[in-house]
Length: 145
Image 1: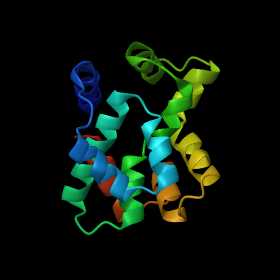
Image 2: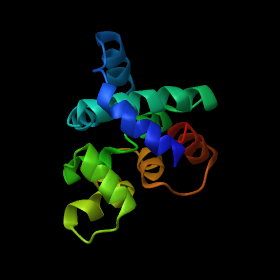
Image 3: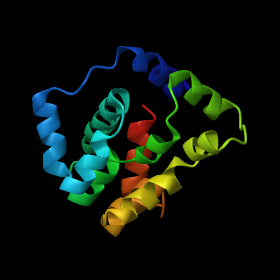
Image 4: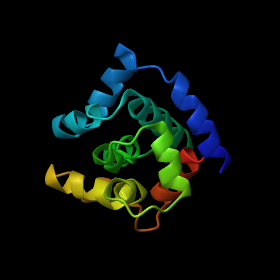
């Protein structure tokens, strides 16, 4: 829960990626993945970049597909189009609205999005949160810091 509080307050001070950081993301992702990644809000782009770098500290020999999965791990949240306060509510209160449900089930939605752009099975599985693997454990650890 502590990491969620940290993320909440960090969202108010999130800075856009600089040119060097954007180039790094573009070098990791395919063109289709990068276009999808760019559709995220600035705060989510920053979050995904930060998580990918933490992921690589934990798993320095990660494959390209695993690095892509780290960058795209929350991509399923884009269609929910929730702001910061609504995300807090969606996390804490299981309201039965379509957008809140989509947000809470962002892993499955993200995996479906990635299938539509022909991502690798390894990237899709990591975003979906299965199967249990060293890469998934590293991603969860990186995301929970």
